Length: 356
Image 1 (cartoon, rainbow, N blue to C red):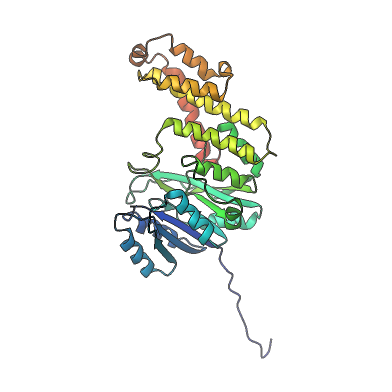
Image 2 (cartoon, rainbow, N blue to C red; image 1 turned 90 degrees about the vertical axis):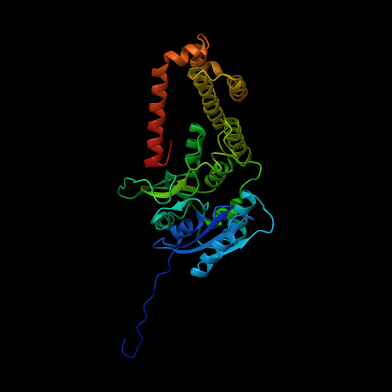
């Protein structure tokens, strides 16, 4: 208009708050933070929480804060543990549209936050978006990954929950997850009584109040596996995994009475089958040390009708032979190969479609 002033409205970017707990991971921290700050298409903010590390985390954190005003950080006076540290950042600090919990030894994949934000923006009922995770061990030698056209899928929360009960598996590692902040703060923080399976319980809790999205075609995050990582040390017990998975599914049903009661049987059956197959493999490898009896007892406690499970029949067949004979001859190699093939197919479905 004559005499008017042209003004250009700059669209605001989706905001993402990324919480990075750090305990003695100073040497991983710079690459982790950089993987967040380099994300395009979103307005990011980073909080590093040093849980009283004994290495040079305070110095590294201070350098990162000085180099980029988007990085905040502070140090606990006493060690609070990972669960309390997670909740401190997610519930007390985060205010952005979306929130990410990222371990200091993991990395976000390039463009991951922009892709997740796109799913959220197009689907207001979605409370959580995850993507493919790539496992690696060396920051300087990330695995080469196949990149396909980016696609997304959305499940109704109830549908996603049933899929998890049916497989009894957690299809998410953690760093590939982006949560709508208002949903995260609605459902609350991680439970301290589930240190091994608290992430699975969290995903199910979110799915109980919202839909779930998945982005395929490109990685969402890189998950570092090394000798000091929690999955290799604190929580390596087979029974910790089996017992807490069972506890999680029972808890979800208890807290969400509107879910079908039949889901409990689905989860218990799958977990019992998993325990039995672990016992089967102990026979095949001649590694009997009493663990197989504990696994059998756990399976029967979890799912009393063991006789209908093929894994139970497989165990009975093994018990007819000495473990040393089975180890030498690999008599049951074919069934094991079939099981491995099914596992491979399931893994590929998880990798490319986000479900098992």
